[in-house]
Length: 472
Ligand code: SAM
Image (cartoon, rainbow, N blue to C red):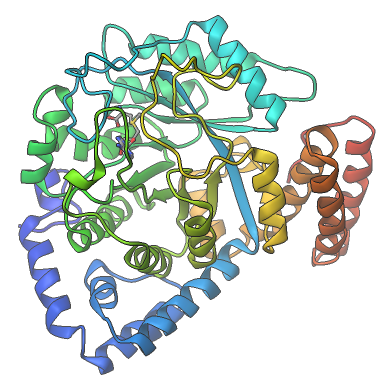
């Protein structure tokens, strides 16, 4: 029985409801009257239901698809302006007791190099990340109660926040660790994390169980209900995602939106972010072994449909994707990207030796952070290192309310300008600095409120003279 307000995984992600939705979408994908009606509803910028969105995803009318892409681009501009937030992943440990068949960290993999960073090694990595210019990290770890207990994760977070190297600091630590208990989520909240991210991998229960044959992650309900426990533990910014390629994308898309509807129904706040990873080659993983891979066109359509269905939810794309693919979907709804990433345990302070391999997957976009910042500006974006929202208490429903009323732009845009300025002064190459300074001059003029503009201008001068961390 489908019930978005239920706390039972199989009721809020109801297989029958997804199958009915897919059938409804198939029946109606050429019903242009209905498609138009749904597009009109999406234009109100209040989102779409999983059923409506699934019709648009299934629709293959080129003219309607162009309308969907154009609307996604417009909604992206309305809610996020031209800002793109930057972050980097930091892999703490690849010890893992699970058997996920798509991930090289699976317990049976005896040839991958297992590593767990000491606090001192984390310190070196964080200094290297700060020297690149990063302010926001996503912590990653395998699931292993002996090697990576919650105490280790908490100690690592404390270490990361404590490091102040030159003008650098990590101001927001997001965490992507396995599903855990309410008590542990409470501890993560107390440690000052930003978003708790957990990819569902697949919403299809039967496939889920086959893809996770062993280990605690095998438990579909425990995994799927994790966000409810995280919210109960006080974490009100949670990040969803599926690993595209594992199951049929239309099934995953409907499941993802049902999960968002569930969070909204139960906790009054939808997901803070949605990630869209695709399976990549890795140590003993061959993506072609998975028959549900999606091409770049479908991928772009998924991003656009998510954008118009949950306009107020941030969307993340990692360096799994190439520069060309990232450029395409930035326009369609992505608001956060990683840059200069390493998916190995360690590797930022000094490259991993060739005879070792601890990486989770191969990256496609291998450019440095500086190259990415420069590129973003050249293609019309304003790179942002802002971490203000959660530090100002703008989380959960407070963030969503501001975002839905578009007020968030009155803080985000000036914060983006000021944090970009920090980057340019402290870390940028001469070329990036030149392009960035010109961009900042243009962007300041677009700050609507005279008073805010004045404060930003004052702060930019103070940043030149060594002050840091201004925020609205
Ligand atoms: N162990 C934690 C968990 O179970 O959620 C942390 C997540 S793991 C470090 C980060 C994510 O990488 C996984 O959730 C999965 O979706 C993704 N991943 C695993 N193998 C991958 C592969 N071969 N290609 C791309 N992404 C992969």
